[in-house]
Image 1 (spheres, helix red, strand yellow):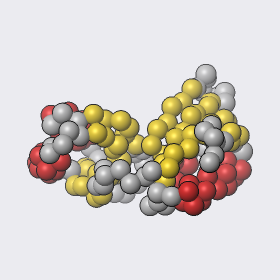
Image 2 (cartoon, rainbow, N blue to C red):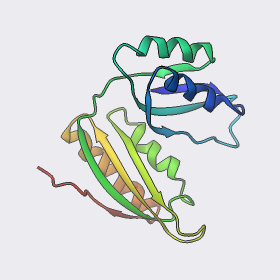
Image 3 (cartoon, helix red, strand yellow):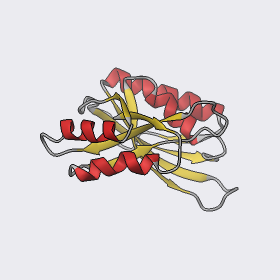
Length: 163
């Protein structure tokens, strides 16, 4: 789901609580507040699992919280690849790196785990990308290669065997 909500304290929690209330399981939340944005709203992407038949109730509960659903969809991303990125990930705007994949419409970062030894040291991140097709996965990986080159990041790819 991609949600739009007011950019004010407590709104993210208000958006996540209904998911729990309907028995959902949150897998990932992607959110970056832009401090110099003039907008009074922010976008949040949520990857979640819901029991059968609970989606309509979740939509109602989110609407009651003042949260607008921008996009919702079932699993359509069938191809998965996992890569490792190493470098100054936070200093080079990790949100931008993820956003360049997520904004394609054919691929998304579905999992991200990160190790940060110290503020000024290099960090490493395990990134799982899902895409609609093999061709779309190749395009998403090409985007990630370009971003890694621009930001002087080391990209180790993919961790799975390629068929």
